[in-house]
Amino acid sequence: MSSLSMASRNLRRRKARTILTVSGIVVGVALIMVLLALTEGTATQTNGLIREILPAQVTIVNATTPTGSGAGIRALFSSGYNLNQSTVAEIAGLGGVYAATGQLSSTAYLNGQTVLLAGIDPSSYPLATNGLSIQSGTSLSTAPSDQVVISDTLAGQLSISVGSRVTLGPNSTGGAPYTVVGTFSSSTTFLDRSVYIPLSNAQGIAGEQGKVSEVYVKVVPQENASTVAAEIQDKVAGVRVVTSTNIATAVSSLTGTLTTVFAVIGFVALLAGGFGVANTMIMSVAERTREIGTLKAIGARSSQVLKIFIGEAFLIGVVGGAAGVAIGAATSLLLSSLGGGAGAGGLGRGARLFSGVLAPAITPELVLLSLALGIGVGVVAGIYPAWRASRMDPAEALRHV
Image (cartoon, rainbow, N blue to C red; front, side, top):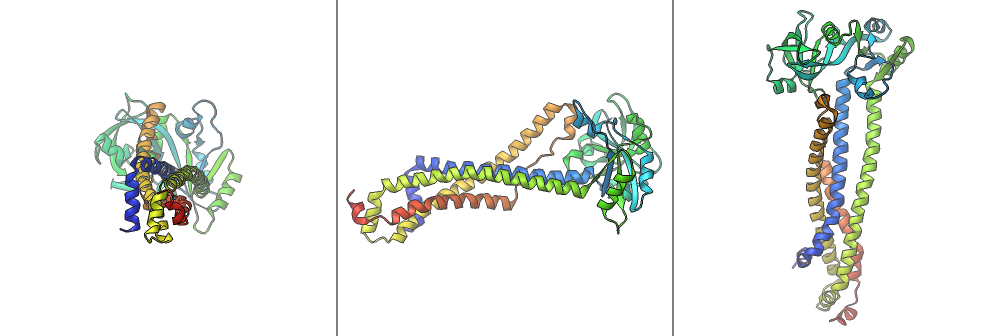
């Protein structure tokens, strides 16, 4: 009989103790899996969100910071901190600027459903940004003005297709008719409920004539985006300049810190499970003194005894790691689902715009890392008990027979 077979048999003989020992590894591996999966998923979604919210190299917004209750929501959706549309032309005339375009962001109602409204200039928006990722139909044209482009997700939810006539307005009971000329793909669920219309129409719906929420800038290819951003900040009063590179760097740094913190928390839990394995195996060695003495008396070498106990620790790690990965993956998905539902329930109608932003990212690398940690901790925890068993004097052991 092989060492691994004997180890498996020994574990099955003490099922209750084995289950409790394995549970320590399961909890540690599952915790690591949950924390790292959610961290990785959040980083992925956040990077996509940055690309959606800041579609240009440089973004300019009003320097006024919203205060008071609901400031965060107002900063995203309110029209109280907009810029004069003339700022777009002022920025476009600066050196190093290839193209500039204004966008007005607000909320509106499409067929009675809350949507994130974006008013853009069809002639300059594609020049200053990467444009919309059109999936069907076309993007907005300069005429006529009753055109709307909506996300493909929203189109599916409302059973809308290219050519459909919809009602768009500032409230759920009124609005003007628009024709859907195209659908676009949003890389994040944050903007799945977005619609794009000409800038003048959006200004009329929001009651913000002559205003824009953001100015998007594309720099001349030979210029550095950070240099152009600094020049805009110096020469244009009352604005705050943001570059997508700076935000991505800050997000990456924050994500790295969170990953480290969560990994330490998970490893501490896994280490506690490892101590449980070591304690259980030390007790097992003491209880199986007769068995060890008998094995050595009939010719078993110290290395064979060592392999049996290391095999038990290995099997504990494998079972605990596999179960921990499965439970961690299921828990990550469940927490993400519950989190989205809780957010929607707590923020009201507008919360649907944010649903699904957080999602776990369960990658093969994460699965292998979690499984390897479970096995590694199990084996390391079993080294000392296995060494004690292999060093046991058979004559001393047989006194207990």
